[in-house]
Image (cartoon, rainbow, N blue to C red):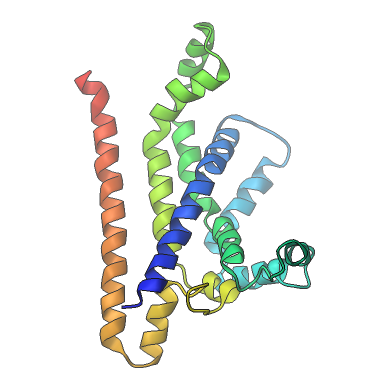
Length: 224
């Protein structure tokens, strides 16, 4: 069992989930309730990571984060190391390829909130921040929770983009998915089976907790 690879995968998944939480809420609300020029283009761009082959997306991210790119050169000048084939580059790539998993469930959750509820809150004198905190987030929470679990599970199991952008550096970019691939390539099926079972168990627990919490949230108003 490659514990360092598992720890790195969990760390990457947690950071991706935490960073995409506020970004997903903001984008989800914006796309749910605002009409603006280029909205369809924004939604199409957010959907691209779902339809592009991971190697294609990984290639473009590698070019964008590489040492010859403006972003890669700026990062190297500031921190003295390259952005690609590092955990920081892996995190940026993870944020990008997980955007649709975070934004789309939140967008659907906010779209399901009746407009009359928000208008009634405004009539009661609530500020936009209090409407978000006290009304919108509690009503949209099942969708937000689903988005977080999807983001966590998808990051945990991602292979193609991670390999393209991060490579296979032990303790730095080797995730549990890459470690499983390495063991299969080395004909170590027992180690691959153990790591696959651990990955399956973690994903199953995360999804089960999401369903359990969502059920509790839906039942709470009926007990009030």
